Image (cartoon, rainbow, N blue to C red; front, side, top):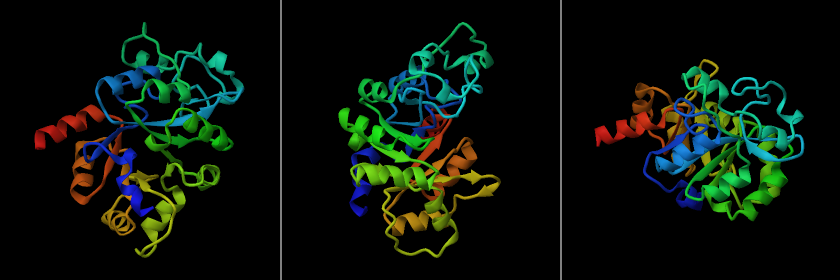
Length: 260
C-alpha cells in the first residue's frame, strides 16, 4: 500500500477537511441538502454512511432506524426504496433549527456518485451483505479511484476487500486502530491505505503522537474523527494528521484561513 499515499482520493488542500455525514452541525446529515451544500461550498470530500433498503437499494444513512433524524419511525430494512423516497430525511434537523417548512431527501449511492462527480466519498459500511453490490456500483459509475471504503467492523471490511481485490482503497477498522494504539510500533502489512482514528472513543482518548508515528512508519494516511472544537483541531494539526473528519467543516476551514 505504500504507493497509495499519492492516490487520487487523498488529493486536496491539506489537511483534508472531510465533512462528517456532510457536516451534521450545519446541514441534515447524509441527505440531498447536505450534498448540495458541500458541493456548493467546494469541499473536496464527503464522509457518509451506507445502508440498504428492504429491496436492496444502497443509500446514504447512518442508523439502522429512521427514528432519530426523520418524520417516521421503524427499521431501515423494513422500508422499500419507494417508501424511503417519501420520507423527510431532514425533519428533526429542520425542526430543531426552526425551519419546519423545509424538507430534504435520502439519496441512492449511485445517484450521489454520478451527480456529484466533483466529490470524493468516504463510504462507511454500516451493515454486512452489501460488499458485492457496492463494488458493482463503484465500477458502473467509474468511481473506483475517488472513494475510500471504511468501517469500524473488521468483518465488513474484510468482506469488501475480498470482493474488490485491492481495486478500491480501504481504511483500518477497529482491529487496526487497536494495533496502532496498543502494540509496539513497527512495519506491518495491514493491506490498508489509511487509519481513521477516533479522537475519543467511549471516554478513551485514542488519537495520539503514537498513532502519528505508526502511520508515518507504515505510510498510511491518518484521518481523525470526529473533531468538533477548535482546541481539538489545533491539537491534531500540531501533533500531526492528514485529514480531519468534522461535523462543522466551515468553522475549521475559516480557522485555517485565519492562521495562514
